[in-house]
Amino acid sequence: MDATLAWTIVGSVAGVAAVISGVGFGVAQVRQGRAKTGMAGADGPLAGLADAYVSNVTGPVAGPTTLPGVVLAGEVPQEPPSFQPREDLLAAMRRSVRGMSVVQVVTGMRGVGKTQLAAAYARSRIGEGWRLVAWVNAGDTAKVLNGLAEVAARLGIGRPGEDLAATGAVVRHWLEADGERCLVVFDNVTDLEGLRPFLPAVGNSQVVITSTRQVASGLGTAVRVGVFTEDEALSFLADRTGQASTSQAREVADELGFLPLALAQAAAVIAAQQLDYGTYLSRLRSLRVGQYLSPSEGEPYPHGVAEAVLLSLDAVAIDDGTALCDPVMEVVSLLSTAGAPRALLHAAGRAGLLAASQKRRKKGRAVPPQVVDEVQARLAGASLLTFSQDGATVSAHRLVMRIVRERQVRRGDWPRLIVSTAELLEVVARSLNPVERVKSSV
Image (cartoon, rainbow, N blue to C red):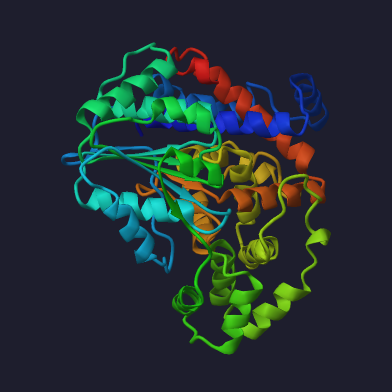
């Protein structure tokens, strides 16, 4: 492992902090809850998490890495099962490169595949040997700054102890001066004005922005992503399930609004349980989401997503001898949308955090890394998790994370899980405090 892990942990810590603040938990409440539930303090089983990573966090910053002639930064998602390349959209992105600085903005509703489209484009540039391919999770300005700091570290242009905003400006100027065959992807941008100062204005680099906000298209050339066409949806279902397209397959696609995220969940369940389209459709229509999810004040789910994800979560739990699929999803859903380092989940397993999140399991039972890996592979096969290109990080779609959290609230698990994850936050945050280059972002 290298110092890149430091930046990922910072994102995870920020994600936990946001979740805790979002549900109104203060520090005093967290401590009080820990006392009531008997959660271990810093000298308990979770203390090993800090020990496992402090050397990585405080170690030397990594330089250019991984492929001859290519500098990679961030975690580009792997290609998902039965990926539909959507060649027309990829071709539009390629046509926009005319030997000048280009900013492209990929917009669309949640679940249409914006991130996967950008990832496919990034993977193609890696394959072509571009000098730099960087993936920055841009859910907020803090994540943007941390991502750009990693880019600077990989390029060897950052200065130890420099303000993160200044480091971001250094990256921008480098792209403007020497950005030929260089790609930076800012995924899931929400703060458009916060990102604007770090976008190159001249030069030969390429920037891709993904966002659900249509106004983001004002930052560059718009590439609008919609739901699957009927042909794309039926082709995806046939490829993923191994079943021929039928009128019932068309009904499933229509029921799910041709939304790629929902179709991925449906296809995984159909394939895993060897269902026909009609049986799956019947189960989908009979599911009453209100029985499983607590009402949310956020934006409504796209049609069919919540039902499809709930069926998928139930399907992976069947015959799960480890009883760890739910705990792993719960931990990932409480961390950053940037994803969780697999090494962090390994350490959490060894510390008993994963087993402890199951009420019926004895608290503190250690789970070996190979078992945690088997669980992650099972969840990835169900399209609930996605591995990064190098396999070092796992992430879940933001809608999937939200559904898992709301299910926890409905089950009454939320306070207990918040307390245990806050314990993880405290331990990791303490280990990060001595690190001068990242302390301003915690």
